[in-house]
Amino acid sequence: MEVILGKTSGFCGGVIRSVLETEKVLDKYGDTYCLGELVHNKQVVDKLEKKGLVVVDTLDNIPSQSRVIIRAHGVTKEVYEQAKEKNLNLVDLTCLKVIKIHEMAEKLVDDGYFIVLAGQKSHPEAIGTISFCGENSAIIENLDEIDFIIDSIKNSGLKKVAIIAQTTYSMDKYDQIVEVLSKKNGDSYEFEIQKTICNATEMRQNECKEIASKVDAMIIIGGKHSSNTLKLYDIASSLCNNSYIVETADDLIEDYSIFDKVGVMAGASTPKSSIEEVLKKLES
Image 1 (cartoon, one colour):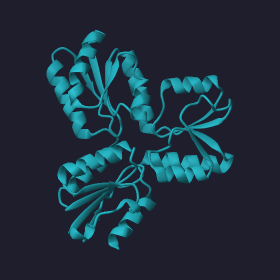
Image 2 (image 1 turned 90 degrees about the vertical axis):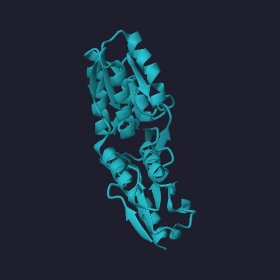
Image 3 (image 1 turned 135 degrees about the horizontal axis):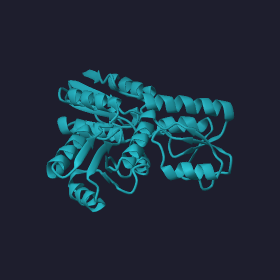
Image 4 (image 1 turned 180 degrees about the horizontal axis):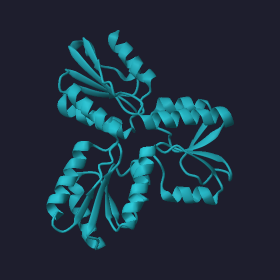
């Protein structure tokens, strides 16, 4: 059996920065709060919790002047305001690319644009980003919501529309949304297209397509709540009938020896150790 590992598998730059900086904070100060999971990977979070990371869902029960880490996905504008009111010591580890999108969104609002955010409505990054997009904005997750988006744009009275994206959103879905919106409203509105999908995400999705198209089975490694990992699985399963998603080597339950070629890809928050364990188990 030949195993093909994607070269772009594993930690992206934003995750590396978040994890390393969190470890520095924990080594220096000890127990530290983190608003939500730092990254969407249980193994990474469990390791950090053993070093003193305390994951909380809200700032409500955090004592004033406490140290709080803002996770890689970012938070809403209101969280920053609440943290300031409570005099909390923020360690902002939001991915720098996400921060740039927040800044872009605020400028687009000032310039009079209705903002369409292509993203997963329940994802913390999308929830955070839309809070910087003002009242005249909407999140679109799937193409079947396009009519609602068009109605929202019309009701706003604005004639300029900007389309941005969650950094881990599907490239293909984004392109489809842009195409349909442009065709239906091209003559009525001025469009600003900002494909804010992360370069690392784009490279990983492209490599996943390439590998999945030439193997007998595809294994995607990553957290069950990781948006970019789930996108990889969607891509793999559309091209390879025998596609599987696992968090760790313990989740490998199939007999992969029946396949001649097995492809392996991992999400942006998947640690190197998890990838190595999966490869070792496949080889054995």
